[in-house]
Length: 278
Image (cartoon, rainbow, N blue to C red):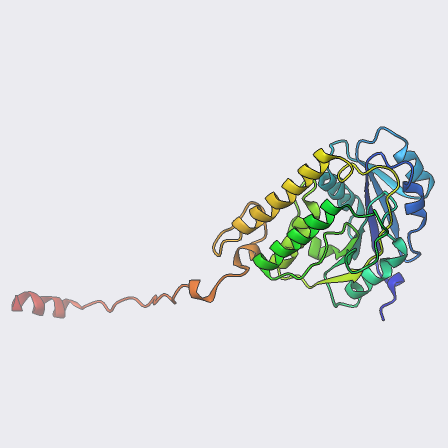
């Protein structure tokens, strides 16, 4: 069993107008965590103040977007061993963080998802549309890349160097599903751990509105379709590492070895003999 205090583990919490619950979330961070980073994503309330009072380091990302806030938190975390992502609304359970980071610290996983499906969710904590969207997204990832995820839960831990390899770039709601899809495509060791889930504090900006649900659902489907389309056997995309182009390349697509041996050149005597015979 690895000693978690020996690892540099940092928490990144994107937050937009979460003054009611952010302080409790920060204070419940386990003792083995080196730093809690709260990314204030253009909040209009006292989220940043409450987070700082609770002991978090607060960084600002003025451009709205869940993915943008996560990337700002990653940049603020700097070099470390493991980064844990969790929401600021009090729905996740920080007490269960050890079950996420232990497989990574022990070398058994690169990415661990806290699965609300495998854990216990309070009644009303997950809306029917969230449950349906999770099942659909996980089914598509299984069909496309063979993944066996059961949830897109935001409570997750990932090895810092693995995060660099998958080159995350989504700026909005597609961040979580993009991470899981690229983890499968890059051949990362993925795992899930049961995670309990409570009713959030305050109203959800996504599942709490029809517009938010539609936008999130459309974004998730778009990200999965995009990742599948650019998963061609010979395609390199943008700034992704070259290994991305080689993932899932069928053996039938391998080119035959090229014979680079040059043909033997005829000497002057042979050429003259051929000309005479002609």
